[in-house]
Image (tube, rainbow, N blue to C red; front, side, top):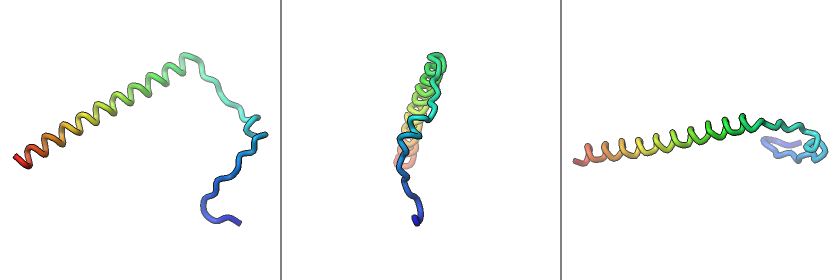
Amino acid sequence: MSVGGKQQEYHTKLLRELPVPVLTQLDRDRIADTVRAAYKKRDEADRKEDLGLAKLEEAVTG
């Protein structure tokens, strides 16, 4: 008997039979564009956070 979490072994026969969907090129491009846009927005948010923290630090320390 196991207690807690346990990593089970993969059954190779079942893995071979597992259907894997194949996306169209249009869908792959759309997903890639969405991910790239999200990374750009995250980078912009990081820059704005750094700028805000720098302004706050300047206001506090004078």
